[in-house]
Length: 319
Ligand code: SF4
Image (cartoon, rainbow, N blue to C red; front, side):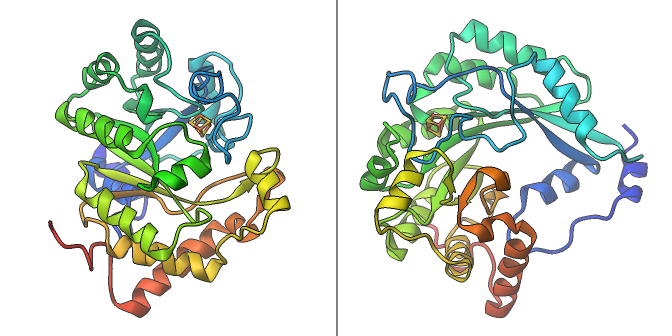
């Protein structure tokens, strides 16, 4: 890998008030690193009747993945299509195989090994990212995932925590407890697996104090990353039905900016921020409309931190 050339071809990251995962990748590898989203044909215990039969309230038929992981074609074919869809650049690019759609540890271990190995056969792939639920992480599965760890390889487990509050987990119809999340995170950490926890801000019924309590709890857990989503309503979901038939409201853009900055100020400073906003195609998004303007939202977060003269971890206190 010609790291020197790659560094000179693309601008480096600008200073930010939070510990952004993309900046970490650039600073560590000196080259562009992109995720190749994969839909490996998994289902989910919260959809097949094991813990539930209609999924989390916010989950559409396509699963919790962003619009980029679609289709059930061959894993290598999907990776090839994703690579071709990225803008061409002379700069060197490396890739993380991202098992994104539905629950990507919900299969016998030998099947999981086969799928992960297939993705990793590509020599430009330098990482593996696996999205799943906390109740689909038995010891055998964690042992398999841990077996991929090696120097210079980005191994990430993405776990849907969403919130630390049981009543919110029940509202979201997650079908697992916060204790299940804690248990899975601790067992993953014991194996040295980097975990990125998914969090949703703006869950109906959660107060500001509830959301900040989740930031404090997250900081006390052995997580290496966090992916924050604003609660957003997707067409055809149970959440859409509730949105249209009950009086729950979603945070405004201004409220969300304030909540995210408050949350990040209470977050451990070393936690890598993978995302600060949910991502959906305009055609399927019901609300809030401001969620379509990612650049505006991220810019407003930067401005708010500049106004406060604070940053991630500003209010974090080691317990
Ligand atoms: S756990 Fe994930 S894939 Fe399963 S229903 Fe919930 S959001 Fe959808």
